[in-house]
Image (cartoon, rainbow, N blue to C red):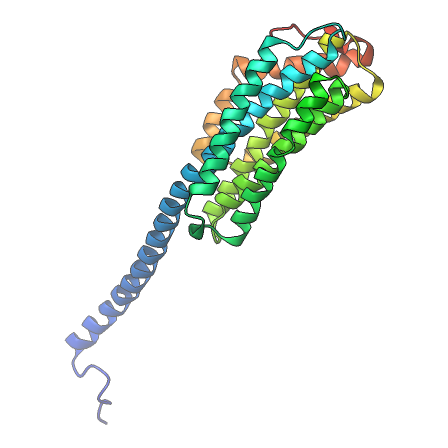
Length: 277
């Protein structure tokens, strides 16, 4: 019986063939892995450039709007005889500079690098900040109550999360999941900022209505839910850093203040935490 032409004719050749098959398979797998890793690296480099050009100006604008929200709540919660606070007016100017820088970045950047979803998210953020001047007029002329102002400012911030999600979106895989987790955890920071604004308004007003207190407690619960939901899914190294932070003084102080607010009820919430907390 003769061997077919495609099969090794000697024992040595057969051994070499048997050893070569796994090696070839590993080579193919390694090549596939390298292509995948290279593709992910290219995606990350592209993502970094896009986020620096568009995401960072949005983040900066959001941070300034958050500060203005708190000062507006404190101004509106105070006596009607109080003149517009210098701190509030100065912050409005800082907010304007950040918003103008964001708009310039979006107008001058290479939008061809962006997906349709990313362009829509950025345009929605620009549209939202276009409502800032009307809201400020309502604040300075006291045509709006302080808790409503907090809600209106929060609506200006909200499109920023769609920007973050769109700009950090990858096609698939673990990196995409991790990016989304981080975006959701950024909301925790926003909930803390909202809490701060609500407490500032309550302290200035010396009282909370049941509806205002319900808004505050809902914000506290939202913060805690988001933290409990997404922090456990952080990558191992990031989760270790988070746990270290969670056991530290600032996070413990935050939870202690929240517990005090939840226990105080509407009548005592304005005095439940210190002014510098």
